[in-house]
Length: 252
Image (cartoon, rainbow, N blue to C red; front, side, top):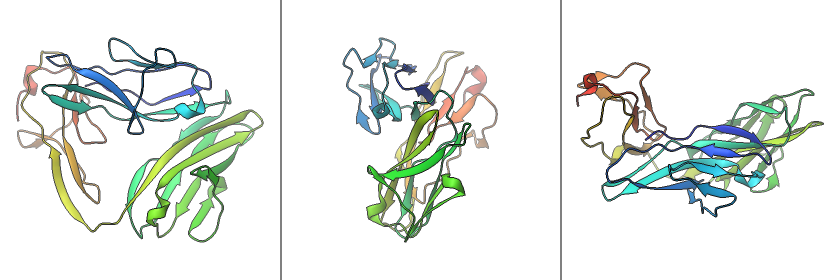
């Protein structure tokens, strides 16, 4: 599977997320935004025959993380998550986005949000629609670009929105914080890779899903040797993407 890429688009513009899937039988494709299924209405949201998701006349509500899910009688697989950032200003540009994360109760977490424009924008942080203020366990540093939350609690689980504003307009992006109350758990495969065949030149995904706390570091090996090179990529979820496959890629 060749999944979508992050995109930044102005309010009222159009977004196209591609999803290239190889499979026999041809899998059914659906799209998720922030883990909720996108309902194609033929107008605002359109899923084309090749699986591409087109979002027309975008609004701030279209901000989020999108992923493609392909399902057939042989199983299912998910693409990498791609972030849609909606801007109102033609010049405000995010240079560093906050990342969604999972943390254990009592840990310290931070979100970074950097924006370029002239004049320099004012940055504010919001949680569940409420403006965050400094105090207690929360600090906002570096002219608003760094949000820190100390000794997190389960009640800190929320979506955090970074909003930048100046005389040109405003732009916003978001990240989710999930707090878990659990002790260390060793890595565990929840979806194991399986044997597959591919035509030369194809793009393949070798699916792999792993659970554990802290989040496990995933490394792929071929015939016992760590993989290197520019033709492969490991998704955030752990799946291996191999591009332009050749006979030399045969192995275990």
